[in-house]
Image (cartoon, rainbow, N blue to C red):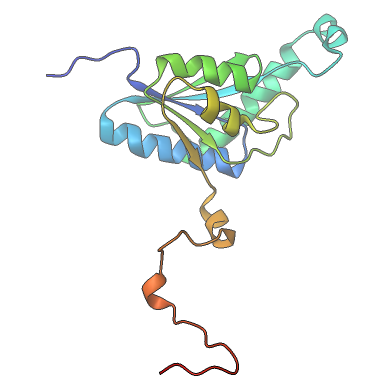
Length: 172
């Protein structure tokens, strides 16, 4: 019988984008197959010039982040979370918080591109920073329809393609 370790979880970076919702779904599929848990993390921070925001209080920012996390979870799983899924609201930059979380996770899952609609959430290339610096494997998830625009992988579908003829030449 295998024993559980603190690393028996998958951490997912969430920002409410379609890519992060798909990351939640993929993490849940993997976690269910492995018998481990999923933690959906939303990371938020005060915008530049935050001193004035701190004096006004942080409740508005944490509440907005919490709503975004709740909405993403609802999009991914419906009104009730699966039993192996938890959420976490984290004050701090998404890049550094997720990289720190990777020390205690089996896998870190992020969307390919966030939408950055809320200051301090997965802005910029969080996925690239996680791939470069995480302490565990990182899965970068695309939105389901994003693959329509991607270049075909080498060797994919090669058998179905016919060579193009070059004008003015004949093949024998």
